[in-house]
Image (cartoon, rainbow over all chains, first blue to last red; front, side):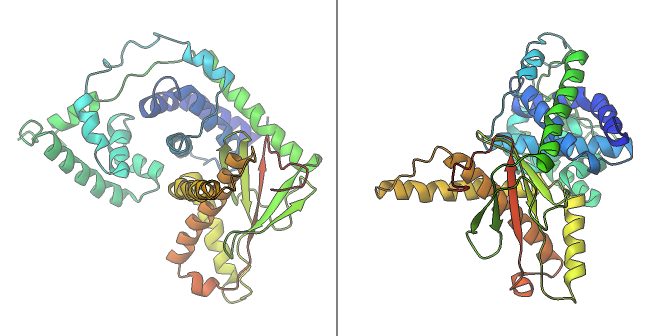
Length: 168
Length: 209
């Protein structure tokens, strides 16, 4: 194993649980393991582009995962045998919210411009900072901050201003 | 910053997830590594069908190549886009860059292209265009079928996917070049080409459709 391979193995090992959760939140529990496999294959093929700094490497992997989600939206599918094992890992995480909790908020997010919605999801679902989310989306941090504020304004309007007004 | 109710609602709106066994995830990392590697070896060792297509000048002209090796000008692995074809599996498109025939701008055009491939999620950049192209091809083919000339080639979906990704790559890269002042007027007369290889590609006995 050369140095690049070792670095990618480490980066994938550190991020794979979060990458799987990200993919599950975007495409559902059933398809996410296949997209995780796709993400890993693309990462291996582009291993020479892996950023040196660990946190940037993590963002790079999420950027690749986002590309697989976009392919998935367009209907491209590939089934992985190994993904079946991950699909069958049922009931390992009891910490997640109930499926119907937050449905109204998710609906409001879905009605936003897709780029704005993804920015909000990355911040609130994946717990990225706005700067990190900007890196995943290929935006300048200042642009992302502006868009994030605009998205929250739209969400406040959609969900009812009084119900979600900022606290004094 | 004081968290507000909307922040809390957004935090709690994340859909449910399900953790995987760490051993399965490690196994997937190794399997993905193996999946990625054979293509790198095959590129230099085996003969296989391949197509070279001119990106500039409209629909593109396909010519057969009997060599798995990337064609001249396509040796740079960083100028590439990967995608998953409907049945051909993982594919990689390599792009040559533009030969502008203009020594005053050539180096800077090369720089813009290299920096774009190095710093951009190329797949994500091309993605918005891919669906549009696929829809165009399918509409054209449906019209052709309605006229009694249905295309029965079983590879049609893979060929559509290839052409859509290739043209999408060209569009996304062109937007970047245009942002640097290299629009179609400046690039008029430039040459460029690309090549695709897929894990399970099938170009038939004639090297192309």
